[in-house]
Length: 263
Image (cartoon, rainbow, N blue to C red):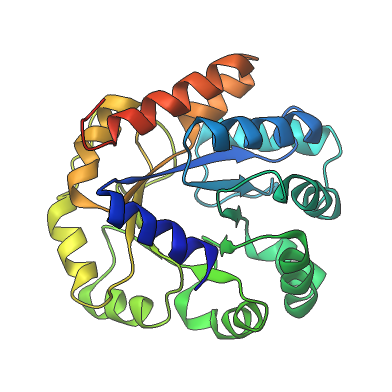
């Protein structure tokens, strides 16, 4: 059983909804990224996404785009990110998931990237610009090294496409709550219950909802429709403002909002 599967099994046993947090590697530097990963782990994050900054993003909104630009300007690279992950892995209990685009993976070579990621202690990978139809080679490479290739399903995904995506899914299904890019929103208009039901017709894997979740109250509103809630831009905004000490408190507040007692 993978570390991600073990995490969701534990959450189900405790009757909890999971919290998936995100930060951009190298913003403002890798030393701070490593420290914040440990802080989020200790504050209750169940899974931590580590974004590999990319110059031509598809799904990232302005907050994460700005973080990527800062990290790239500071000289962060894939090699240095994987080295940082290897250093923090032993001290962090939560599964670590890379959020990246296909270009950095392709440039390293699918086999080499997955091998190095696995050696660094990476548990999963999300590649938002990799279409389902083109995902076979990376899925096979990821499987060989025990890395879950986690797919995204959007409100615009057709029933037949959801079925096809779920058939190849590993780890969990990342359910995009809105059309568009990442970022905090006042409200989420998507019928999340219907979208979640459509996904669960085709898989027993957990469903995590992300995009647009702005804080604890929003997380609590989304939680009934999923197994885990993903929060990214709200955390990245704190980091961008230099409010590093707030990241732990914010993570803990998110987790409390997802607890059976509802905080």
